[in-house]
Image (cartoon, rainbow, N blue to C red; front, side):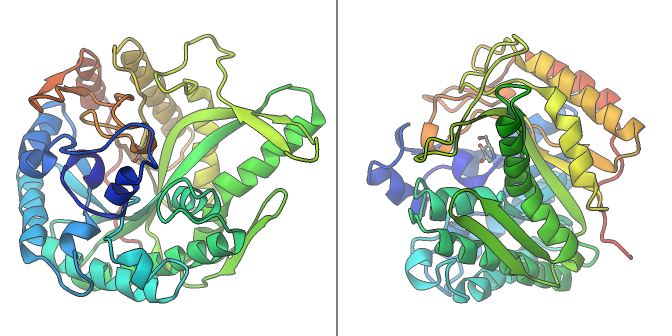
Length: 415
Ligand code: IFM
């Protein structure tokens, strides 16, 4: 779960984005009301047989004014951690899941080095407040997606469209990861530090077309491999045609990471256009005839294993930090779960270090630009009463959870 998508009533940069009419799906509003219901959600996860619970901390709640921390907000997350622990659920804590406090972009934007100190301060306060029971940290969620949407496309806050700003923002996000990791390790003995990276399958629209195939390799290199290079080698150089290059060096990054989180959903089909204006087009297709998800994504577990192999080349433990689908009628979710857990078993059988699987999501939540239309929950949310009700596929999750024994969650290397 991520804070903004479930908690409700959390004024931040994204709320302003909604008010400015920049989203398609209406306001987030009360969301799923989890700020008041986290314990109920934790109990539901435990009753489904889960042994871990991923959530994110809202920076805007914790530091609503720059440098002024809200102890009550920190205490609320600390209470959640205590409850998770009592229920036998390992907390997996994310510190940046897309949203920022309202002051952030004006005062310490990701394009400036001040962002790194600001984020490290937030990380330090949060790690101290959540304490030793919060061991597993995915510091940044999908940093590359944030950079592409917020700094290259201008689709999400802060709404910038500049390749040079995007390159700078990525560098500072990675520096912020490193600084935050040091703070967390100082506050939480034995903490395991990770990142949650969105990985996408890519296929040539025309299987034998050499230009489509070349596009696939460029897209994979840029979208999937950049962060693997950054965290593996401490440097990255990524090219997105025609005019974007991200390159940088952070030699301390590899040592700041204990595990790599993979968020996997779908696959894009690429077609070379080369018509001057656009290099290529990309679209979700359904060549395997399974039917697209409610938000039009291909269901393609076949693309999952190659991506896990690619991520494993980093040489760190892996955690699947997100995987799921929008399926309000719940006609596809059970099979989706079966397919993807079978891939995890295949991955384990070939020795890939996959330590666990976190389904996205426990309960229907606010899906950013698409609002409330896509329904990702194992639990269906009644938007009027905020009551949760198990979808039939929750039974499949329960059965798979009891049979699928991942390895213990990653621990800090060298300890
Ligand atoms: O809901 C999002 C989540 O916030 C980040 N990863 C992808 C999910 C589905 O779009």
